[in-house]
Amino acid sequence: MNLFRLSHILMLASILALSACGFQMRGTADLAFQTMYIQGGNLTIKKDLIRSLKVNGVTVVDDPQKAELFLELIRERRQQNILSLSGGGLVREYELVYFVDFRLRSPDSEVWGPVQKIEGRRDYSYDDTQLLAKQFEQDRLYEDMRNDAIREIMRLLVAQKPKKL
View 1 (spheres, rainbow, N blue to C red):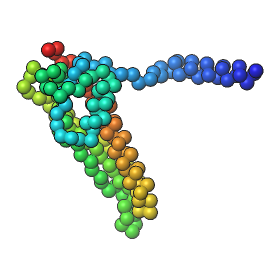
View 2: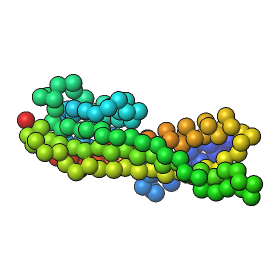
View 3: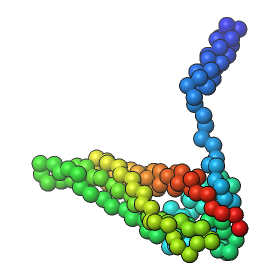
């Protein structure tokens, strides 16, 4: 019985501590529009961005006439730079860089806004003897940077206040 009571007290203390520190689960974004038209190439970020928009109550439409905001995905790039070499000239560290360029436009304007750039950087150690594991790590780092870019785009979209049609 004491163990049962102790577990309840610990759970209550944990809940109180989390609420006291200001912890709040990530909710949906407060977007001022319900429809968006996305144009641009078939970039890897597009599918995940559309999913994030749907979760936040935005419908991605195929007809530009029905959209309250236009988003053009211009370019997505990956880059790998050597950070350090061993004494024997072998690569020991890489820097991975992920870039996304996009711009926004409201339907009542013919002029696109300025190109906005999002950039993510990650470093990782490299070892030729663990080639498959390091390739998997590199893919995960790029995926994390892409997810960070989506969150940044969503934060920028919260600030957009398109005129209603």
